[in-house]
Figure 1 (cartoon, rainbow, N blue to C red):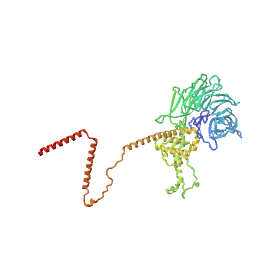
Figure 2 (figure 1 turned 30 degrees about the vertical axis):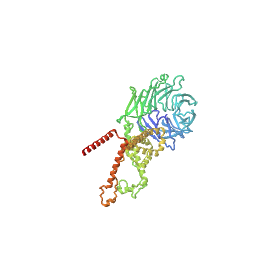
Figure 3 (figure 1 turned 120 degrees about the vertical axis):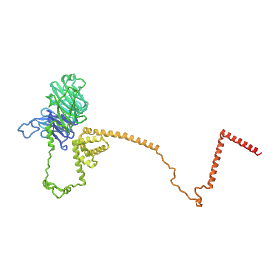
Figure 4 (figure 1 turned 90 degrees about the horizontal axis):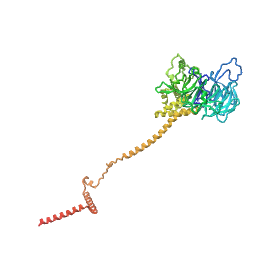
Length: 627
């Protein structure tokens, strides 16, 4: 039983393990043949007519399905069906052989979406939904049989116990219900979040249920109808949340294989299950073996995620059937566990390689074939008057060809956008870097919008991945990524809303992280730029000075009366000389007054007295000479 809450996509193997079905978020049901590694079926429902599918399970029907008006002459063989639960509360049966919805079960259904569906005895189906009810459906009559309320907690998973004719309905807790009396018999508590997966096991007439929850990294094995005093559960520890679980029971030996969200497979082996349950402790059991897959093509070793695991095909050889790759291309392989080491790494090529060479050659040959379109010339309308001749006639002249090529202003951008859209699809499908570069070089917003409008929905996720890689490069590439992403959100908003919250967050998570990181870095760079501007301005103010020139910008000479009388300009007048002498005398007087006011120094006074004595001696000598 596969439920919508399990993983990023809903998947499950058939009862014999030969078929693998996957229900993606875009509403497509895809089916692979695990023996031949071939992709065989793809069903896309009409969402305007049918409600989206939320869960499914494989069922095998012997004979006819539903009421028949006319009896069948010959008994039909067993047919594989996929019972699909819808968001509107109904159940649809998809025929694997006919590749179509063959029957819709009739009845009131659930008042909301169906969260889980499983197969019971005597062509009976059990479903639970958001309305907290369990409904029993009959495959023979194709109608609803009965229903009952299960409480206030919304169920997320359920499984039918064939030995005791009971039903386990799980929300956060596990509830054991009697199908005959529709009464609650026992409650099991152990998970912190909603249960996403339930597996039914029988070991020597003892019934067990294996459960996994939405956020717990453990698997819990419950003993049904065990004594209250003895422990009734046993846990298995993993490194991440389990997505796909397979189990195998031989005598008293239990083997469990679980694929985690990170794409790693854990293998648990319990030799004596009865003794292990009786001697169970609170400490969970660690995996016996861990298997990983790596890519050997590139120089850098890249892990290849494991998506699914099954034990039905390799039961006799004690092998595991694993499916690895991505949701677009899957490869299935039988692997024999090597218990000599605790961790085993398998080296494989990329997921696009296919082991079946004959099938690969056949697909390549079919892909190279071209189909010639059938055109009725009577219904063809030409732009020119000349009719295009048939094959074998005269070649069309260049003038006629140019006349047929008529473009208007409105249709030109749409035609270019259509061509770019086809080129973008080819680039995303082949992961060709040169083609992607050619597409992303278009900066015209009209061409970008026209391209994104014609982009198929299945390539939106790949385009977002390429834009995320582009946003991690230089500024020009970041500008291109933002431009394409803006128009993608505007043109494909309805498709993005239909993807789902979990898938949408997983797709845009790296891009949001890059944007947040760049925004935080931009804030720090802005602060640094502002501080550097302040420092540069201060340095300029301290070093730059205004250069003032001493030379006069303009000199004007006015001719006075002296010039008219013939006196040269260079010769100074007597008045100017007297003015200069008077100025010098005034300066000497001012200096003498300052000296007197200051009182002078002792040395100056002594020198003055010596000068007076010298004057007196000179006077006496002059008198003696006169006599």
